[in-house]
Each structure stands twice: as C-alpha cells, then as structure tokens.
Length: 349
Image (cartoon, rainbow, N blue to C red; front, side):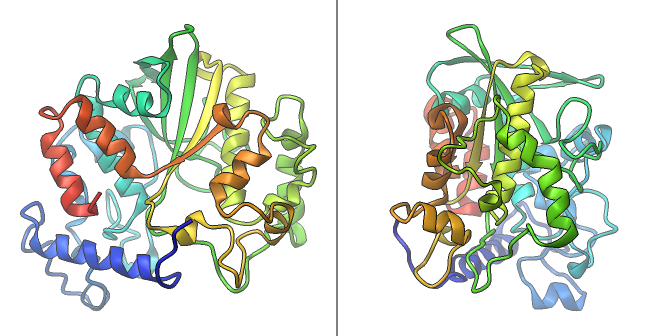
C-alpha cells in the first residue's frame, strides 16, 4: 500500500488541518478559536473550554441535536482529562476526535431522506431501504456507541465506556428481504504501528480476555475461520483486538436475531492517508507480530481481517470517508450540499 512519510506525519497534518479550520471557519466563534488556558494555547487543534459544542456540524448543535441524542440514550462522549475537557457537557474539545467525525458525518444525514441509504448502497448494492432502529423508547435510522440490545459482550450496559461497542449502527433491508446490520467503526488519527506492539494477552487481564471472548471466537456461529487462525491470541493486538470484538458482537446480533437482523457486517471507516492504521507492518515493526508472520504476503489490516473470516465479503469492509461522501453527493447533491461543503472544508475529503 502507498506509504508517505513517517508514522506521525498524517497525525501532524490532520491536527494542522483542524487548526486551520478552527481559526478560519465561520462555523467557529471568536471565543471558540481563542482558548485562554495553557493546554488550549499549546494545542491549536483544541477548542476553547466552554465551546465544545462548536466541534459539531452546525445543524446538529441545536435542541434535539447530537447532545440531546446522546443524553436521552445515556451515551458517553469520549473525553480526555489530559486536555481538561472531562467535566464538560457534550463532545470533547479535541477537533481530531474520531467520535465527533462519525457523528458529524452520519447524524446530519439522518434528517435527509435517502442519504443514509446511499451510504449502505455504496457498501452493498443489494440494499433497498434503511430500517428504523427501535430501542428503549427511541426510534432512529442510526444509533451510536451500540453495545447490543440489552448488554455488551462483557455484560455491561454503559454505552460508550468500558464495553465493546461500535461507533455507529445502521440496519439495511435487502432485495432478498433480509435485514443486514452495519456496524461502523470510525477512525481518524488512530495508529498502532509502534516499536513495541502491546500484547493484550498478558497476566490476569489477558486471562480475562480469553475467558470472555475465546468461546465465541471458536463457536460454530463465529465468523472467524479457525482453520486459518486457530489461536485467538494472534488478535490480542490493536487494531485487531478491537475489530475482533466488534466482529464477535456482530455474530451475537445475528445468532440472537437482535433487531431481527439476519446478517451483519463490520465496516471500518478510516482515511486512505492514514497508513499507520491501515498497514500491518512498515518493515521495522508490526501491529500484530503473529498475524504478520502468519500472513507475510498481506500488507494491510483489511487484507488480514478478510483472510481470517469465513465469508469476508459478507463480514468485513474497510473504506475511506471520502468514498462514502462521494456516494452521498452523487445521490443527493443539492440536499447534502451544506453538509458536504462542511466536510470537505474541515476534513479535506
């Protein structure tokens, strides 16, 4: 796969892009781009404290928008105490947040007829409609930080914290009258290539992980192919560990027919330029050394995941946000013009 610059180059470029957007976009107030705390002054991709709502697309900042959506469902926003936004209401002040990018992409489209359908049809052309998701008294064509109907794989009930979750969930109806869940995981700056990949199978925590997930990984209904990767420990490195758990969540949804789904696909949305996330190895190090050894001919996380699954076309995909944006704009150019302009200006997609 194409690789340009060091592992940190994309991160630096993205932070600079958000800095330029913060200081130049009419969607950010003077107060928003003028942080007066030391952390904000040192990190120009951060909004001023108290202006975190300006991290959202303008159309979802209002009453009934993203903050109310999360609050009504008791969904936790991602926060970072290191940048002093842990106690704020609403999203983080960090403009490179992948959670914010996901919400800014999908929630505005939920109000535009046909927009979310164009996303699913870009992924699979047999989708004919987007089904409403009804859960705990709420109905929406998209949900965020989904952990399952009643509880997570780990048994918890908190959405967005300490449980296996997916950034966004949509359910499509197909030409074969089947319901297919789409579990979307959104990435922006995340990267896992490092000199010392962290193995999550060590010690008591590692034993806990095996106890929680091994049975599901090896179950007959699992989407993983044990003939290809017999040892689940190979996946106990990021980003494979997260994707594996999300795939196991998808398997549970199908087996238990949560939301009456017959099929489920995990889709990772990550910029093409973020090769330190997409690549398995850069020659000096690997995200998962055992998977790199098992598949020496495969260069990307996407290729390794697909090789590990029984039905890769049905179970997994990895796309760039630009791919989805272009699909929406082709389908509904006028209705989505304001949203598309915002996305192109802010994220250069």
